[in-house]
Length: 383
Image 1 (cartoon, helix red, strand yellow):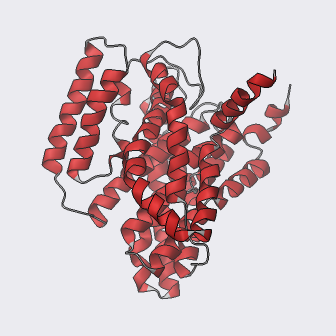
Image 2 (cartoon, rainbow, N blue to C red):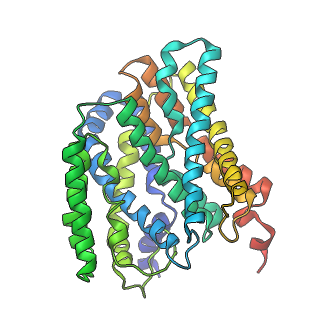
C-alpha cells in the first residue's frame, strides 16, 4: 500500500489541477525575494511556455468543448452552444466599461490604455475552481467555452488595439486554411491516430497564427474538432480507460505534459512584486471581480429572453457562480497588461491587479455556498 502513495498523490494533484496554484505561489515568493534571478528565468522561458506549451493546454480544453457540443452533450444544439459565447461578450464588455468609469473618476488618463486587462479570463484557474464546485455538471463545459471564446476575442483585441509588430494576415490566413484542409483530409481518410493531426495540422496552425502576428497559443483549438471522437463528457484530465477514440487518446497522452506546462506557466507569469500597487491595481481588480459576473449574467439573461436556452440542470444560480469564476483573470490578464503598458510603474501596478484577481476563487466559492450551487446544493448532500 505504501508503494502506491506517490502515485495516488500525483493522481490527486492532476485531478485537482494543483500544478498551477503551487507554481504561482513559488513564483510570487521568488520574484519578491530574489527578483534578479527570477527575471532571468521568466525571460528565458516566456516564449516556449506561453506561446508553445500553452497550445497543448488549450487543445485539451477544446476536447472538453467538442464533446459537450456533440449530440447528447451538455451544450448540444447551437442555441445552448451560443450562450457561452454570448456570455463571453458580456463578460468582456461590462468589465471594460467599469474600468473606464473607475479611471475617469480617478482622473488618471494614462490608465485608459489598460481597459482590456479586466476583460481576460484565466482558463486553467477558472476551470480548476469551477470543477471543485460543480464536479460533473454542464457548468464546467459552459465555463470552458466561455473562457476559450473570451481568449479568442482577446486575441482580436490585442491585434487591433495593441499590435506588437507588423501583421501578415494574408500569409497567415493561407497557411491556416491549409492546416484545416489537411486536418479535414485526415478525418475523411479515417486516420485514427492523433499524432498526424497534432504534428502536421497543429504545427501548421501554430505557424500560421505566429506568422500572422497573432498569439499562437490557440493553435490546436480549431484542429481538435477534426479528430474522431465519441460523445463523452468526463472532464479535463480525467482518464477513461475504456475510451479508444482518437480524442480521448489525445487527452490521455497529454495529461501529464499539460500539468508540467501549467506548472511552468504559473512559474513564468505569476512573479509580481507585491509592493508595487497603485490606482491601476485597484481599477483592474474592481472591474474584473464585479464586472465579469454582472456582464456574464446580464448577457445570458438577454439571450434567454431572445429564445436561447440554458443546458439541462443549469440553473440561474449556477450562472452567477460561473460568472464569478470567469472573474479570475490571473495569468491571461497579465498578457493584456504587458501589451497595454510599457515597462514601468503602471505596468507593475496593473500586473498586481491581474494577479490579485485570484481572489475571485474565494468569491466564487462564497457565491456557491450562498446560492447553494454545485456541491453545496441540497441534492448534492443526499446519499
